[in-house]
Amino acid sequence: MSEDAAVPPMGPGAPPTLALVGPTASGKTALSLAVAERLGGEIISMDSRQVYRGLDVGTAKATAAERARVPHHGLDLVEPSERFSAGAFARYARAAIAAIGARGRLPLLVGGTGFFLRALTHPIFAEPPLPPERRAALRERLSALSEEELLRWLQALDAEAAQRLQRWGGRQRLLRALELPLLTGRPLSWWQRHAPPAEPPLRPLVFALELPRERLNAQIDARVEQMVAAGLLDEVRRLYAQGYAERSPGMNAQGYVELLPHLRGERTLDEALALVRRHTRHYARRQVTWFRHQLPPDALRLDATRPRTELAEEIGRRWDEFMRAAADRARRSLTPDPRPLRS
Image (cartoon, rainbow, N blue to C red):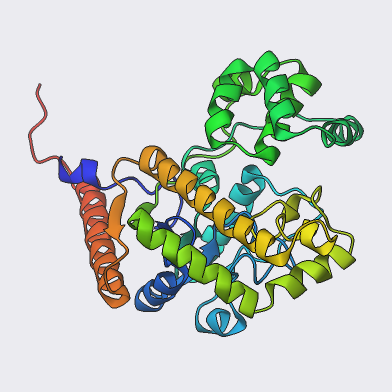
């Protein structure tokens, strides 16, 4: 591989950006703090549940002490009743990246929501206007359907999108994929092929944490215990008292959706926590598979069993090499060609 091929372009007008991804409980938060402090960075969360206000313990959101160490962005953006799409994240993140870069700091994208990263590296098409009243009415009708029923509808309307979302999907993505064919008459796959992208692609330097499955499962189980000790049940109880339940977009995450039936007396706490552990392990496996197949080919993969200080040093060294190579390319592009012009 040539030096130029090994260094991805930044993206037109975008400041240099670093991304740190990995499955839940793989150690991203602690490592990102060390990297941000070493490189003078600010963290942009790429977690689809940390955008919700009030979901703190169950999403392992950065604490007040951690936010005091390093500025964080992308947290507490919307209420649990509001929908927050990958496209909304991309718009928010691009503005945050520009502002951080303008301050002379390094934008550091951190999280496990692969679709958020992909929305930046493979920009979503410019969305056609959808009438708000019809969209709300459609959402209300579809809310009564299970994920299996939504998938069957999508298979009939957009087989290509259904095949993809059967593996990588989730309720919110199924609903989004159904909105377009039902409200525009054209499926999501058609819009993806024919509509222009809303923004130019971003090309961050991506680092991916990897762990053996047994180690990851053990860390997930330990995290669940830590969350319970930190007040997870009280947090879910408070949100439930505020009127948020399974249909709220923010509440269908692991650690919340399993505990709601417990609060209604429909399962014991031990049964609920067993489901939290099981569902979180399943989710982590889906993340691992996604990161294995969907990251840019030049993503740098790191053994997360190594000491944190060692990993931070390697990321810092690789970043320095990345920046030197980018500077060399920029200089070469500005150097006149010494070869004489042919007459």
